[in-house]
Length: 423
Image (tube, rainbow, N blue to C red; front, side, top):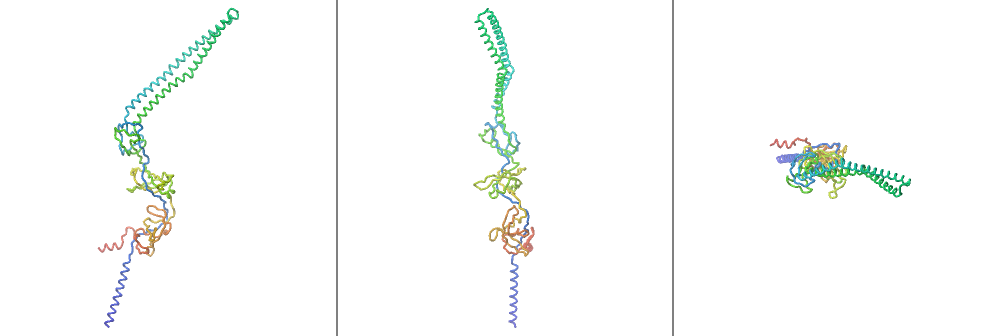
């Protein structure tokens, strides 16, 4: 009797221990807390991203046209200037003296032109007219003499030789008269114009010398060809810039241009006018822009195509030379299955996967094919459908068919709450 009771108690203890062990195993099964969101069907933008360097909208290296010491600078590095503003002055005393000399030569030439027009030509014309009158009178006298001797010869009162002499004298007088007339006409037309034209040409030559001298003086006043900011001023007053060396550098950074290299496979989607976003690599500062240049050639070394993205820079926060990333929108895909980028995980058998939570609070790994990407979301071509509850937090290390507990963003895990309560 006592032995039977002992066996019954032992059996009960074994059953109790077995039940406790199963309960502990059940409680030991992990239930991972996760956050989920539904895969949606919406439009997604096709984007091309590439790294590059910022350049100014415009830049001018101001190189003086003449070699002379710098008399003084009127600006410093960092100063904002307007187009045409005086930036520096070079020594110009010798050029100013040459300008004064050229001005005197011009005045002398103009005076000579006025004299030629008002005095020299009229005097020559008057003399030629006097010569014509004298030649006419000589011709008339020779004609009268010839007529008289001709009559006397016909009356037999004069020898033939005297008539012939009178004929020769008349012919010579007539020729002189014609020559005087021709000379007068030449002075009144071609001669007068040529003399005035010669004097006018001397005036123009003197004016050209003066303009050249004045230009040399103007070149000593160095002005800004564009509006912008002084980016460099390597010299000091009194120094002479080497030939071809910039005296100053002016940059227009009211707009900046990101020159980025796009892979050849993606460059076909990029068009002039595409909207884009430029983001600074160091500060994360972003600004909208648009594509203004797509290179027609591919760089054979990098097999990339250079693309220029221009953006406004009103506060001048973006500095030329900084590294940036450009995100170019090349199109929009409607009705795409979209999940957050955080939902993508490396697949257990390679590739890309997402963890989908079913109604049974069990996570199922689904291998997916990814399409276009935006910074915070991605297109799913296959493997998931709209409405799937995909894990966006807590999926790293989560096994397929693992039990999960869905928590809301900002909600603390119950085990964590319990642990804090125990403490």
